[in-house]
Image 1 (cartoon, rainbow, N blue to C red):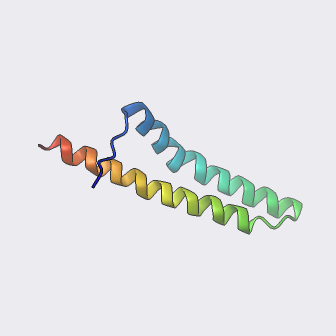
Image 2: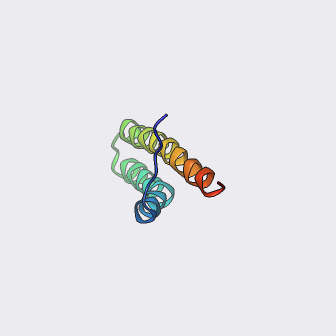
Image 3: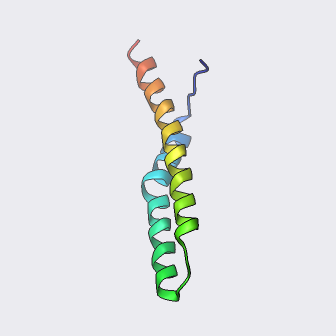
Length: 71
């Protein structure tokens, strides 16, 4: 299996994006869609699905980093 390691700066940016920016964007899009009468379910579901997938890959890298640090 190929090891995935991210530099600390990339890790920090991804962590911030996946834990703060993406959920905030989903809520903003959903709220504005409701206010203006747009159907935003498809786009917010897509964003959430992509963020969940990216978070899963991100966790693989994080676990590998922690595992290598214990050696």
